[in-house]
Image (cartoon, rainbow, N blue to C red; front, side, top):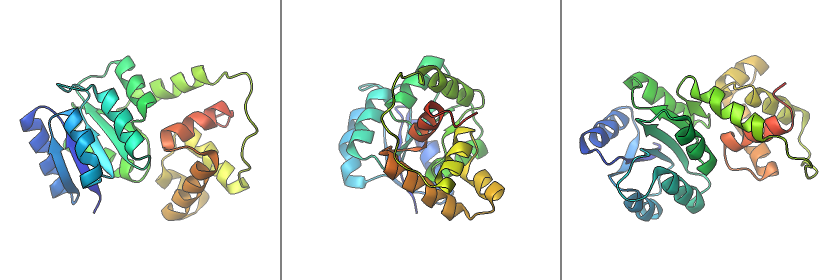
Length: 212
């Protein structure tokens, strides 16, 4: 069971999200209302996924994301926020969030986003993914790159599909591979490139022009 922490300062919303996750088979190890409490508790309960609201009474959601990613590069943070402001989305992703969903999402959409985030996909409310990719393209004009680590032909092929926004399941179907094989190739690529998550991987791929 995937260990999940819920962070939201609204008690009824926090309880509802925790209940939905528990009913879907996730192990909700903590449900807290403050960012500082989440950061302090994380090393003890060791969540694999954090469902995080951006508007918190003490720390900002962006500060919490940064602290959690600093604690463990393996933790995935899915933002669940009432805000769909573009700057909020970009700030969250730059801090290390793996995905961003607005609270108007249906329960089924939320649980699908959770499952895909656990699988390593970068999940965004429709319309926001294009925003993030556009920002990465805008930033992908660094004048000189260090010599890139050598990737295998298969790793490069999968990286190109990741850059085009395909999910791991879609990549597996296109290349006639198992979902696990695709994940293993991605993990190997992340290790070679010294990156932490799929969001960083997409940015790298765009910088290398692999989204053409």
